[in-house]
Length: 139
Length: 291
View 1 (cartoon, rainbow over the protein chains, first blue to last red):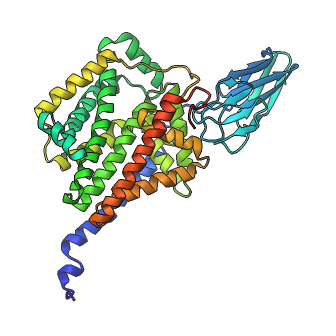
View 2: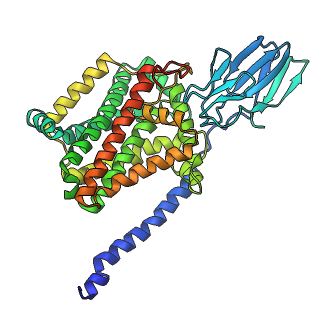
């Protein structure tokens, strides 16, 4: 058995290394704090306004998918519930996520994964005077 | 098999390590004019302005892009070369960890460059990265803050791309190679190759969200995995386990190490098959010719 000596137990080099590792946590914490407080940028819109003159059927408006059926609209979030990609097309009556291929019905119901849940149905208000819908992006 | 190919290459041309180092330096230098013109508050506009009004800007952007791609490609080949020789055992343990981290940072510096394009593909890549980080329990939110910042601004991504990761990779390369400059010949080869690619295939921006969204070539396999495995946390777990196995190569005994390398190589081949399937045989609606 190797006898435990002063140097193998805790040498000066080991002590300095350990101290350096421990001290490095402080700049890391500072880095974290600065990152958290870094500039906020332009916040995402909380609502979007669309004209009431929507085409019949499905239309894409950035963060929103509008489904107009016999004059009454349903607004779906275009953000895929899987990893947040924007759904921007329909094929054969299905909405397809361009990033990972999740499929949804035109009512936003999940047909095929990887997404595990339906598209979010967005609530909206109607302004008859201006003929506009105001759609809330985060329900 | 690999040994003779690498020997043949190294005898006639420059080593992959030197080529990767030269590509890194060219990417850094060609990135300086881009960093000056880039505006984190209007990223897409500032890049469009550069591409539309500034002829040298167009050249530097493409050169930056191609030298970056070559850096990553030659780094991967360099790693495969040394693993096939078993020379990772010659490295000190601390340096091995730093090198693996630098490899991880290299992938990140490429990905952050992809995000900083701020075009349709870049925005989607940012969303996916955000989504993946979010799924990590306990640490996810903090990692999101440290890596991407807490907002819609690309400020922190820009800082990491230009300073944090570049500095770390540069220091580790110099420590690993024990020199500040690669061989002159590797510059000549690399500059020639990158300039040819720049002239033949200049890089633009994808301004509108097209039907097909493809990540960069090294992430197409991951995109395919994310299609098959619906739980992103499981994907993060698999990637982390792969990384841990890779780090442990330096510690396990040579027989086990050989087995682990074979396993990792098989995974790499599988990843390549997934990449080819997605790239060549999937249409915009994600229908595949094979599976």
